[in-house]
Figure 1 (cartoon, rainbow, N blue to C red):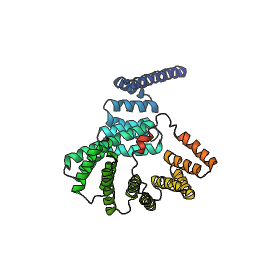
Figure 2: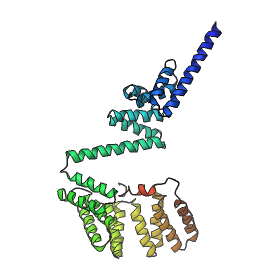
Figure 3: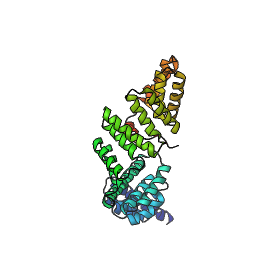
Length: 334
C-alpha cells in the first residue's frame, strides 16, 4: 500500500515538474497567458521557488501586478529577475519612489548586472522626461525652462540655439550660478573665431564674479588665452584652476604640456604623473607624460608610457567612452 502511495506521489511530482517547465518555456516565448495557466496549476502542489518566481512574473506580465508584487518584492533580495519584475510593477502602478529605491538596492547588490543597469538608466530617463514635461507645463515663465532648453539643444549639437536659450535665462536671472559658465561653453562649442573667443571669455569672467572659486572657468580662460597666443596669461589661469581644484586633471595636463615646452621637465613630470594616477585611463594625460619623458631623455620610461598608451587606444568591443567623457564638464568637488 505504501509503495502504491509513493508511486502516485512521484507521478504527481513529475506532472507538476512538467507543467512548471512548460510554463517557463511559454513565458520565455512571450506566451504569458499560457504560462500563467500552466504555472498556476503547477503551483497548487508545489513550493518550488522557480515555479513561484515565474508564476509571479507571468501574473505581472498579464496585468496582475497587485498579486505578483507580494512574491516579487520578497524574492528581489536574492533574484535579479524578481527585482526587475517588481521594479516594472511599481513603475506601472505609478510608484516611482519604490521602483527607484529597489533599483538602488539592486545595483548595490549586483553592480555589474547589465539588465539591472539598463532598467535603472531607462527609469531615470523616464523620470527626467516626466519632470521636463511638468516644468514646461507648470512653470513656462521660469528661467529654468530656458536653461533646460539650452541643455537639450547642447545634447543635440544645436549650439547656436543653446546660446540663445542661455542668454534668455541669464536675462531673467543674471545671478543664477553656472549659467554664465554654460553660456561660455556653448559659445565655444559653436565656434572658435576671435569674436566667439571674446564673448566666451566675457561669459567666464561673469561667472567668476558670482563664484570667484570656479576652477572650470579659470581653465576655460586658460584655453582661450592659449589659443590667442597669450602664454603667460594661459599659464596663470591653469595654475589658478589647479589652486582652486587640486585634482583637476585637465588643468594638470594643460599645465604639464606647457612646462614640457618650457623644458621644465621636473615640474611637467610631477604634474603629469599625478594626472595619470588620478585618471589611469586618460589617453591625453598618458600621451603628454610620454612626450615629457621623451623630451627629458628618459627613454625607458617613455617606452613604458607608450606601451600603456597603445593598450588604451584599443578599446574593448562595445566601448562608448567618448559618450561618457562628454558627461563630465567640471572638476571634482573639493
